[in-house]
Structures are given as C-alpha cells and as structure tokens.
Length: 414
Image 1 (cartoon, rainbow, N blue to C red):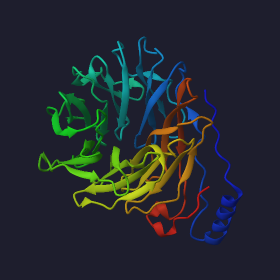
Image 2: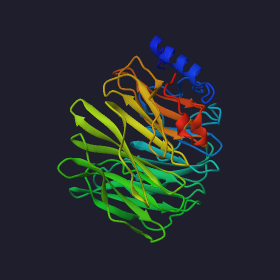
Image 3: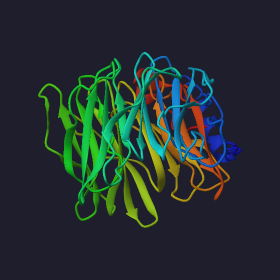
C-alpha cells in the first residue's frame, strides 16, 4: 500500500486565507475541508491495479471499477469493482465483474442511474467490447457483447447512463487501415434499442471515443481526427430528428501544436462540456474546455496549464469540476471548480505523492453541485505494484456557489 499525505500550505497562503476570511466574513463562509483523506480502494494488491473509473448515483453512493493485472480472476487480467455509500464507507468487498476470464479483460468504464443500477463496460481480448449490469455489488444479468472482437485490436469503450436507466455505449474500431467510431443504445432493461450506428470513419487514434448522453436523448460523441496534427472533433445526435448533425472540429489549437484526448459530460439542460489536452510544445500540455449544445459552441476556457492526465464531470445545472495532474512530470493532483458561465475558482490540492506520475483517472459528482465529488486514480512506486486510490470532497466551498451567485466566490482556497 502506498502512503499518501496532504501537502502543508505555505505560511503566505494561510495568511492570505485568514485575511480574506476576516475581510469578507459577512458574505462568504469559511471553506470546509475535504470529506476524507485519500484512501485505497483495492484489497487485492499483487501486481498492478489500474485504469480506475468511478460513477455516483442520486443518493451519493458510488462505485469504483478498475483493471487488475495480477491474475486475480485466474488469468492475465480482470475487471473489479467496489461499492461505497454516501459517506464514502465501503458497502462491499471488491467484486469481480467479468465472467469470461481467458486472456485480458481491461479498459473498464462505468455509469449509474438515479436508482443505483450500474452499467460497466470493458474490453475483452477474445470477446470484444463487453457490458454487464449490477444493482449494488450483485449482478442483474450475465455479461453481454456490445461489439465483437475484430481481427485487429480496437480501443476500449465508454458508457453513458441516463437517470431512468437507459444507456449508450461508444467505441472505436479498426477497419483496414482506418478507424471508425460507433455507438449503440440500450433500454433500461438492458435490451438493445437498435443496431449499432456509425458516427464517423475519420478517427485517427485507436482509443476510446467518449460520448455524453443528455436527458432528452441527444448525445454528443468526440474523437481525435488527424488533419495535419491530431485535433478534437465531435458530432451531435439529435433525438427529435433521429439523426446526426454534421461533424465539426471542437478543439482546434489556439496556442499549441495539436489537441487530443477528449472527454465529455452532459448536464440536465441537454448541453455538453467537452474537455481536452492541447499540446503547447514538447514539455507542456494544457487542459482546455468548451460547452456545446443546441445553441452551438461556447467560448474556449483554459482550465490548467502544464498538466498531466485529467478527469471531468458536470452537474445537472452545468457547473463542473476538473481534476488534473499538476505538471507532466510532477507529483500532485489538483482540482478546479467552474460554473456553466465559465467562471473559475482557483486550483486546490487533491493529493500528493512521493512517486512520479500520479494521474486522476476519473471523477464523479455526487451531489447537486460540483462541491461534492469523488476522484479516483492509480498510483505506485516506479517499477513496482500500483493501487487504486480515491478521495471524497463534500461542500468544499461554502459561499455564493451553492446559490448560483458567483460574485461571492472567495479568491483563496485552503
């Protein structure tokens, strides 16, 4: 198990916080501490536990899933999960999600509906893209194949789950020398809502094509597309029309060389927030975001500079939280909160490590706003085993954010 400790704020920061609290006490309450310290999720510790993902339901409970490559399922690698209640206390031991165990089962993703029904998807080296549904740690049904294995390897998949339980799977696959993006919708009972649908044949990376699913049935799919350099593209499916709008470039680089690795989340107002990395030069990449929906593309917002991997989630009202590796070769994981209107809070610390390359694998919003969330990541010593960690945050800032009055946001963080 890797030991974690929070970094001690410098004296200057503490002084600024104290002055700000004394000055603005009538209109902004004292920021509250995170709900937990970082804690280890996996119980089985040999070899590598990686590719962590997390999803939360309406009551604040959540599930974390990951890949275990230590032969835990009896062969090369398997997919495991663990359930937690709204107070971040475990409801179960870790549970094996995959039934088929030959070869590698890896690259999981997970979503959950308002009642707590979980949908997990993962890549199987023999079967292809596989899914399975759960209610708590107990399976609802057997695993099912979403996309059969191709002759050549194809990327893992993504799943987006609606509040009533229907869900959308998206993925990339290799076709000859090209790569295409596909989706398939499923009803709340797990039955296919129709055949798989081709989104584009212009993808350039053999990776996940994430999709956000809105309450009205619209969804937006993103991918990397090779022009001169990789760039982030997207396409919106309009449920009322039963068809896609034309594909367009979401993230042409403004100051960098290329854009890549998009992620997406939807809110309850049928809008989507796309976030990606923009490569500035060899030693720096930034995290950039913009919203999109029926009203078109919103402005670009640079969320963080000089970053590693990142994770994003969006609340029902469009506020969002991002977690990111602070520096491509640094130890810290930091976070940032933002509003639908792109007003940003200062960065705050999520975790530090004595080892290099900690990266937030995923995060999920738990409550009605972006102040309640969980971050999960995988981390270990160089050349050694790795484990899955998580940290819960609840009501991190108690000021105008909860009422929507961003004018009262404090300018300092603990």
